[in-house]
Image (tube, rainbow, N blue to C red; front, side):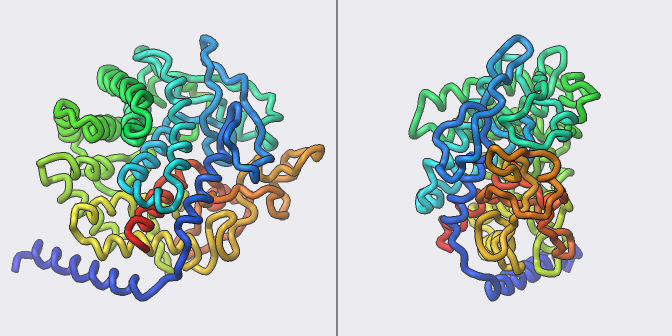
Length: 463
C-alpha cells in the first residue's frame, strides 16, 4: 500500500479513536445560558452613548463621546477591544465576521437559545461603528486611541481625559488587510440582516463592495504603510494581506452569489499561494478560513480537501494539554481552540467526519465550561474567574477612586464582566485567577466570537 494511503488510514483510525474517547467524557452544560451570558459581555464592551443595556451592567456608563476623526468625523460607538479602551478596526472587523458566520451557519441554534435577536444586536452595534469609520470609498478609520497611552491608564472609561487620536488608511497610506477584513465583516453581516432589514443589509453590502475594491487597488500592510505612527505601539501587527483579500472576496461571493467575486477570491488564493499555508484561523491569519468559506460555494474540491486535511492534522498532530485542550497559542488558548472547532465544523456540515469533528467541538467547549475542573467563563459554572483583567470591572462604585491600586489588589473585581471568556490556561492546564496576568486572564471581543459560534452549533446539533 502506498505510504500516503497508509498515513491517511492511520489518521482516520486516530480520529475515530478520538471521537470514541470524547463521547465517554465530559459534563453537561446549558449552552443557551452561556450564549446569553456571552452576549452580556459584548454589552459590557460597548462604548459611546449606551443604549439597550442589561440592568446588571449599571456600572458601565457613556464613554469616549468625543471620539473624532482627523477632520472631525463622528467616531463614537463601537466596542472596546479588551480589558483596555482601545478601538482597533482590524480585530473588531474580524470579531464581527466570526459572529456573523456563526449567526448565518447556526441561526437555528441561536433561535433555540433565545439569542437570535441578541446576536444581531451585538453585530449591529459593531457594524454601525464600521459604517461611521468608512468615511469615503477609499478612507477607513482603523484605530481610535494611542496604544501606549491607553495601556498606561487604569480607571473607568468615563473618567478618561486622554487624547484619543484617530488613524485611517487611504490611498496614500493603504491597508489592504484591514480594509479587506472590514469588507468581509460588512458582507457577512449583510447576510445576517437580509431577512430582517433589507435596507440595512444593502447599506452594509455597498460599503463592503467599496472596501474590497479599495483593498485590492491600493495594496499595503496597514501597520507598514504609515497609517499608524511608529510611536503608537499598536498591539495588532499584521504580517501580510493576501489572506484577508481572499477572505473578503470569499465572503462577498458567499453572500451575493456573484461569480465575479468568487473568481477573484480564487485568483487571489492562487496569487498568494494560500493552499501552502494551512493551520488555524485567527485575527491575523485567514488562509484556512478562506478554505472554509470557499468549500461551501466553489465547484473546485481543493478547498474542502485542504480544509479537511488541515483539520485532520490539527486534531491528530498538534499539542494537547494533559486535560485535552488543543494548545496552539499561549495567548488566548481557549479562543484559538474554539476557532479551530468553528472552522472544522464546516467540514462536518458538508457531511464529512461528522462524529469526530462534532465531538471535538463539544470537547473543547466543555473544557472551557468546566471539564478541566473549573469554568473559564466569568459568571458561569464552578469556580469561574473573579479577577479578569478588565479595567472597568475592577473599578468600585463611585465615589471611590479607581487607579492602579485596583490592578494590583488580589480582591475579586467589584463588578462582574459576565460571560467573558478569559484567555485561558497554559500548556499544562496551569492557570491563576490573577488580574495582572493579562496573557491568561484578559478578556477580549475576539475571544468570545468563535466561542459563541460553536456554542450555537452545539445547540443546533442537539447537544
